[in-house]
Structure formats: structure tokens, C-alpha cells
Length: 220
Image (tube, rainbow, N blue to C red; front, side, top):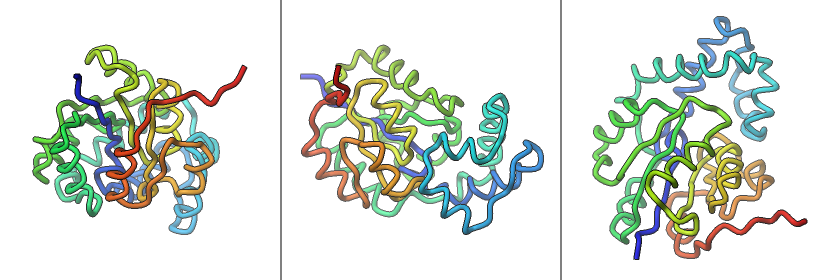
């Protein structure tokens, strides 16, 4: 029997990069033509969907890929100093011990991910890392993983911290667990109807234990 596959988002799900990315994004605001956010506004946008945040920023959609590349480049200067989400390392180890295949699908740079995993002794847990600058095209990367690795969709689940992670998993017709310790707050994540919503890493083990294949809620 083929091992079941658990794909993880990276930023905010495994790596505690929220404050670093928020700082870098604010530093780049004048260059890319959007408004920097104060701490109160950063809390507010946790309750907005990814698309709502982009609309609110008023940044040109054509500039987004270039902004993502710049954020990734600036983050590379700090990535070795950042820490994993508290408790996630133990959960990843347990899932690996249970026989799951672990992978990462991220908008961050693969080199950043590799540096972080190696520094925190997590690199031996993951079988592969897929990276893309696409903000709203992560479902294409998920589909690429499924095709290249020849994974049955009933044997794969995606875990992320943003509404776009939920949307992407649903587009790819795979199960999805949302975590509320990252970028988006629990309320907005719940509105997007993930299969599972967890508030701390240990709860992931219970969610995975009850994991069922994705079932579309769309009716004709």
C-alpha cells in the first residue's frame, strides 16, 4: 500500500516567519506603491481572506510576483535566525514515525526552506519541497506534485495557515487542514470551510488520525 502524503505550507505553518515577513513587506511598501501597515492593522488583516488583503493593499496584480520575489530575497537574510512554530517539530517527527510521506508546497524560495530545515534539523523529515512565486496558483503546484509523484488524491492532505491554502486544496480536490497559529485567524479560516481547523500543533495528530478523503460540497 502506498504511504499517505501530508503536504505542508511553510511560512506560518512550519516556520514562524509572520513578523519577519510583515516587517519586510512594510519596508518594501514605498517601492511597490502600497500602504505600510501598523501593528493594529496587521491584526485586522488576519481576519481578511488573501484576496481581500490584496484588494485592500491596492497593489497592482502585475506587481505581485515581483513583490513575492523581493520578499523571498530579503527573507533569505534572516531565515537562518528564525524558529519553527512551537511544538511543530515534535508533530512532524511523530507523523514521519507513523509512516506518512511529508512534503512542502510553498511560495517561499526553496533555498530559504532548505536553510531553515537544515538549521533546525528537520531536513530528514521531508521527502521533497516544491516552490512557486504564484500567490493564487498554488493549486497548480499541488496538481504538479500529485502528477509527478503519482499520488492518489484520496491519499493526500494539504496543511496551511491561509485562506488561499484552503482554496487551492479544494481546487485540487484534496483534503485540507487549516492551522490558526499563522497568517489568518480561525474565524476567516472557518468561513472557507477546511476539512479540519486546528489551533495548536498537537491537534494536527488528531486531525490526521480522523482524516477522510476530500468530498466536494458543491451540489448540482
